[in-house]
Length: 487
Image (cartoon, rainbow, N blue to C red; front, side, top):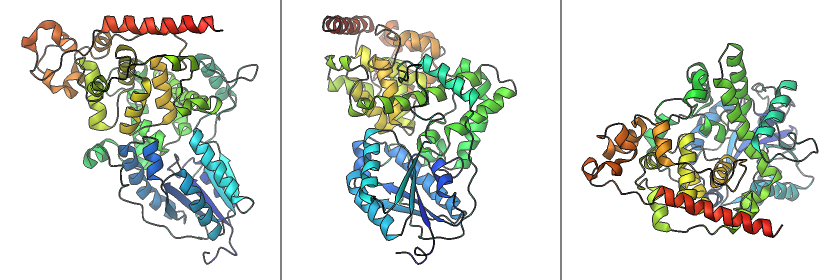
């Protein structure tokens, strides 16, 4: 037991997706008693991360952030301790033992809403019994799950009515932002080194490039937030779908790791609106609402955490399981330039533009008719902003198995999407250099203009979009008919 643990109350903050000192609900609660010593813990669980398909590029960002956060916490006299265990099952007894040995009175953590994480927290609470008081806080959402419900107290399953309720509540009770706590007077533990890497979870993005694209630190996150708000934010509604321009916030990695809170983003957007930001900020606030919506779905419909479709009947669809086609998609070798450019952007940078996520997801699930779960897993293994709720929700929306009010026969035409959102082919040229010499209109469908225009190694289209669309519509229509007969 630590030197002062018999005389000093000891509180612990368990850091998860909240790697910051500002506006951190659990940290604020852990520091509420000015006489209590506070220790921050972070758990490294490599086997669990691998099982959850966490990308190495995201782990790299979190480790870089932890090194900076350790210094920020030290300024508050809060040591950061790293605990390691293979997975959640192994972590529970290790963590329970540490808390008991260090005389911890209260454990504070911000809730995670996925099934495995909730089970882990429940198991730890059971293991601790009455020895340590466990305090779980809502922090990941602007409005906590369970508070945005229909008039008859049911969860929303469609976004638009959810958003109306969500916005109405924000106008009535704006969420406050919490200050950085005061410096502690006592310490009951000693900081431990943050590992440089985690075995088996190497980043697929070169370290120098990852550091340049995704610098760690709360200051870096806020610099990016304010640059977006003051520059691109006003035009977000008109530019957010154009991958060739810097029209999105690129804040998703910072939100996923919790270097930035969604409330901080909301308040920054409101402040900009007060200065006349036009429709851009209103559209961006809708994206913050989507983020909340998908996390609420996890809580109310936990079967989506178990590799099941939100619309359970769609699990009966006979998806194609073609490894060769899937690999062509993964590698950006489909012969559809906008799809290939997007997939290569993911491989090169660990990130993909949101419009392109929809295009590539719908191409895999509707054109190739490959199980959306394959694509969901590939994205998680490569995204620096990999967040289960957002990734699962987006994939199920694209595959027509999830929370989409539109019918299943809404299927993107990749050629039309390319012409509309990358009209000059600037984005395609950046990531598919073998097509860089083509004129604007030719680059969207290079094979339609004869082999003389093509680089020798650019592949032919792996599928005919028209026929693929007809096949997808027929499969969903047959399912709808069969489901109607049994209900």
